[in-house]
Length: 539
Image (tube, helix red, strand yellow):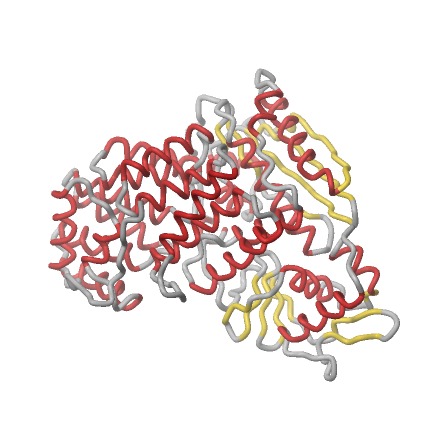
């Protein structure tokens, strides 16, 4: 839900608060407190109610609550003297009294960009072919409660169950990013299955109240439009990770009884023993593919918070590595460099703490590739795929690395697998860029133009996407249009150049590299820019 209070907009689903269109950093429980009060602005909320619903079974002092109220007021432009937004009813509690406008999710919220369900709301022209093994998608679990903590729990549980099932080689699991996009379309199970190309769909409802968690799950055979299994779980919140294991077991047994329980238990990696760390981790990865400095700052804020609570949280280190590499690629660092070194260090720490964390190997493969170590990158990515054969990001990165190593067939295969696993992924623009690179190597310039234009059409395409599209257009003979894409790239990043592009992408095959660099130069891209990025080897 979106809320607007004067010049402030709040996106409760994506945990974003913007002031005059600029994202503000808000502590997780302060954000939860704001949402809790907004959604109950028609009445007084007692102090005890806040303790029970915001902090659940954690011991929190009155002083801590007062501090959180003070921080909430500050971010909302209020204070204890004015009390024009949050009013204190002495001896009883608090009430949110500011005029608040509820915005429809389809309305534009200032500062929010990215892929949405609206982007993909189009007729299904041709259903995807079903894989030759049991296939399913885990749809967004619906929180039936009213607290923001419940929304986060539903999101985190969906993500973790999806990750658990993805590690099973017997199953084809749609990537979480695409399943989440399609969940927002409110289509019938049959329509969803056609759009995602799967046989089964997992639906869930959650309730997160005080010290208990209630989860209702069902598995639908979408091809035959029948529910084949349902179950209800009612547990203490402290048993969260056991709930995840039980749900994964139950879903798999419902679909394919030949998959043994022991394999599921081996597949499930408990990410952290600290539930506060778990919450902050999921807040961090919510928008990990954002292309803005502010968005990445927020991502890193929550991930660092998770690590401060659990210093051995392997997956949080892997996500931090991914974020630092993204900052370097997007040239949006607010510090004096060091992002590649940090990315490598965090990825290594992830693997040091958990040898079976596929995300750690994916992040290590990613930073190795962009540090011009393609062979090492492929080794790490292969290891990640051995641990999780359904890991779309690993397939995508292996496809990207293979494309720049001149291994065209391997590149196109893994890019196709990645897109099949996650047909609505936020990284589709990068997959299409790699596909265009492989088509250039094959001298299929018209096809490369078609694919690169598609890459540039995605909302999170950036200057490198436009630069490659310019090269494809020049190679196909459309110099005027090529110059327009060079102009777009330089408008976003005036320091960009041919050298910048080549420094970040380790081409093993010089002939393809020369084709692209010459085409960019002919389209008007500067060869060298004194402000260009410096990608250096670190291993």
